[in-house]
Amino acid sequence: MPSPGQAPALPDVDAFLHELARLRLLVLLSVVKRADFVYLLRQSGFSRGNLSVQMTKLAEAGLVDIDKSFVDNRPRTAYALTKAGRSALRAYKVSMTALLDALPD
Amino acid sequence: MVHHNDALESRLYRSYWDDGLLDIFAGAGIVGIGLCWMADLIAMGPVVPVVLAPFWGPLRRSLVEPRAGLVEFSDARSDRNRRLGRWSVWLGLAMLALFTALYFRAGPDPGTFLPLVIAGVPAFLLALLAAMAGLGLGLPRFLGYGAVLCVCGAGVAVAGAEPEVAMVTGGVLIALAGALLLSRFLRMDVESGEES
Image (cartoon, rainbow over all chains, first blue to last red; front, side, top):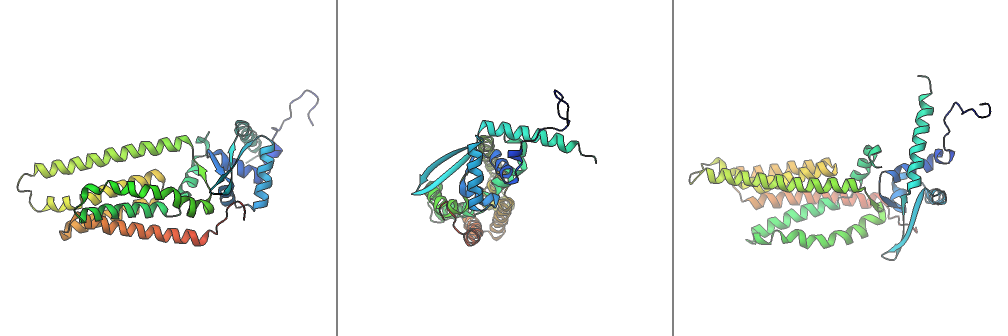
């Protein structure tokens, strides 16, 4: 335990992003401009329920933008990473890299 | 920030074309141009892609997108494709100019070899386009299509057949390969949509 005023020895990792399902979805969205629900469903291999819950959580956290529309009378929900989402992902990568680098070989 | 994971982006981009619809359109386009040539309507050749283009969107929306979903790739990817498209056109024109120069330089008695090679030129040019598309989209099967077109071009040259025969043959083979891919895609991917 660091003493008061002293920085912790281990880097702080964002626990919200560290959840594997959310992390996978954010990584997917980080390499494309935007993707819809069906695309993420297919690429992630998650169940509809899990995907829907995770995307809602990511949107509530401000990491993902949601755009709902109708195409040929079918609902389409498209998702895109927000600026905050990109920054959070970058910070997560830095802290996780630092944490893993601390591992002895 | 798309540069940090190019391998993943490339994999996703490749899989975007796995349904075979592009192959069918490419094959149908080549067959169409070849048939125009056979019917002595070579001037109608450039019209073929224009006739096919309006079918792309509706077919992709009705067959592919309900199963594979919709994705927009980065602006960097679009820029790269545009650059590659420009290079393909320039390279094709350069090859065409080279063959034309060779033909005219040979004079009134070009021998037997050159006219034979010239018969394969349209297929060789299309093979070049297919190879460029294969490199640009990261689809090795398009390099294979390029090889198929080269073989068709060489076959026509050796057999002394008309150039359009190579185009129709190659185009049919490419369209058939695309149809196989599409039928596999439609079988494997149960239509998902958001509501089901």
